[in-house]
Image (cartoon, rainbow, N blue to C red; front, side, top):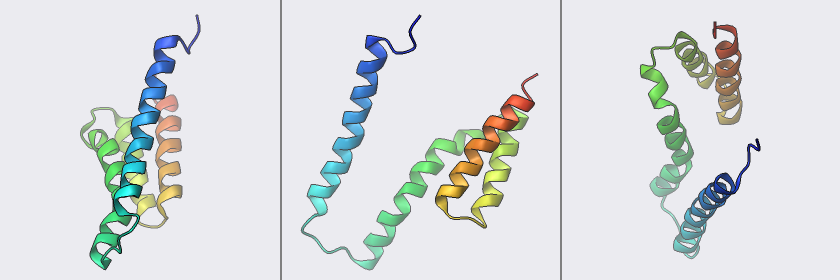
Length: 102
């Protein structure tokens, strides 16, 4: 049994197209404009907002390993930049999930 069948591949390509088209739309909409300081700040905060929308459901999880991973990630976020914080979240979730999966 193959992990990647035609439906999965089509779904992957569709998600890729939608994601890339939003980036292109943003580029073409803003390419000849000068952003105000406030607008630039909002644009820089957008990746953090997207990340929060992805991890927010784990704040109300009933699984202990997910709650611990959220706590470790929150602690890392107070001391580290975005990329290392994301790595802490992913690794802690995976490791704690494996250790506490019994």
